[in-house]
Every structure is written in structure tokens, then in C-alpha cells.
Length: 110
Image 1 (spheres, helix red, strand yellow):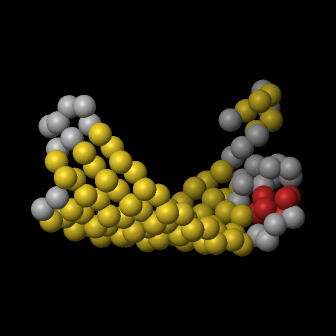
Image 2: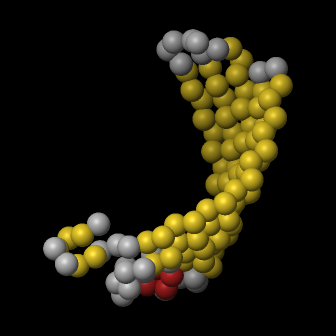
Image 3: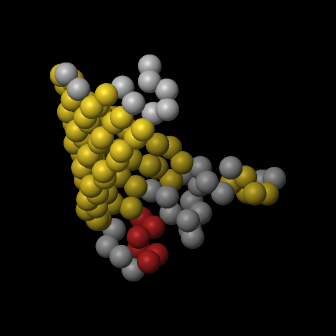
């Protein structure tokens, strides 16, 4: 991305590797995913540090009572070190946990 003809605003390399295990039976599905990731900040813009590295773990359960409905509950944990946190006087490393619940209604059942 460039704002000016010769000034690079963001130049990042992103890497990620994961292992996904999923099991479906009847109207249920249980999935787990483990991931490692990193972002290398190549542009050297001092006020916009984009470097980050960490791990993530996701566990999800899906129930489909019929073809038009889907209930999902998902747990996500991310452990990451992110350089920009120092700009906000926060620790570089943080653990974040998230639980999501969703309900989807499909208008056409396939």
C-alpha cells in the first residue's frame, strides 16, 4: 500500500501454520484448531509497528437441527506478542479469550 509515489506505508510478511481436527456425526460437528502465526514488519515505519507473533487455539461445536438452522458455540484463545501495544502503554504479550454463540437461519435449504 502506498500513500505517496515513493513512500511505503505498510510492507508486511505474514506466516501461519495450523492443524485442524474435525469430527461430524448425525447433526453434530466438533472441531479443534491449533495455530502459530507471525507478522514481520518490513517497512520500518516507526509510528506503525505491525510485528506480531503468537499462537491460537479454537474449539467449536455445531448443531444442525434441520437443513435450515445452525447453532454454533466457539471458544478462541490467542497468546500473542504485538509491538504496537507498547504505543498504548500495554504489555507486549497478552492472552485473549473469546466465546461466541451464533444462530443461523438459511432461507434456502440445500
